[in-house]
Image (cartoon, helix red, strand yellow):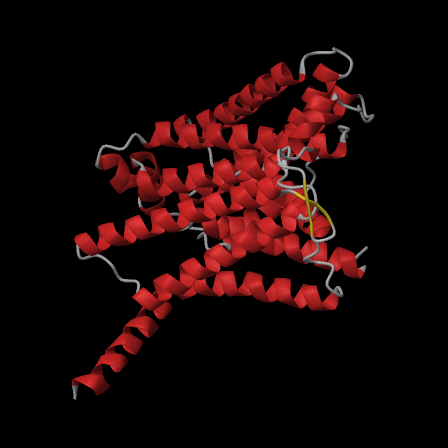
Length: 375
């Protein structure tokens, strides 16, 4: 009797868990399905190492801005100015490095501070003067779009110093220089991928043990095992593809570090819990002792800094600053968050979901570009 009932219970647990996490599962499966579709329709071009590298470079600034945008959306706000701010910061960086001949590293630090200050100004009006974020950031979008045109004088400015270009076009140097699979093979990229995979599986296992110790583990063992196997296969496969080209792009390291940081902030810190609480019910959060004005101000500062970083990366990739830089970025960033599961009403959303949403958009753009659709 027990032999018959045990599998049924296990199967019921698995189905219950899948139904409870259907949004996350469907999102990941959608990305995989889109990638497989374009892999076939592009004749195998999508998964070529050079194209995977381009995919990272083309979407890095969208992913980076989506991290900050998700915090703003979770808190119940919106930021329409991120595209214009990124373009404006890129314009300022161009003026500082080309006509003024300033050091690239000093320029980058100053531009990040400028972006944070811009976010702070907008956040101040939203938080302390209770002006809707839509209105404040819409004004910011128009203002900084005009300022970009003014700063550049209506012309493109470039090229930039090589040190600055490395932010987007540089790669982690290979220290092994081996020849495998008929050409140069960046062994360091594969080793880094293996190390990251090991860390992810370690922390996943540690978290599961902690949940089991407190009687909170809901994920069936078979799903936990399968999920970690898929994570390992995805990371190692991606690392292998990168190793067969030039290795890991510098911007990928920056992007991954930021993703890890924001996952930690949203899941492990008081700050993250307060952001979710604000989005769920701002009045209740305020009555429970959360300084909602300060929290709102800080998330806009973070968004401004990330928009500035995205603007620097975009400018470094093009090796020129143009008045039209950043045009339409806000739509892709906001779309990435909502595709990734964020709610318009706030209080809902995950960092990984926003990242997957950004890559869904990126893969579709990349795949259709290869196919010549919409060009």
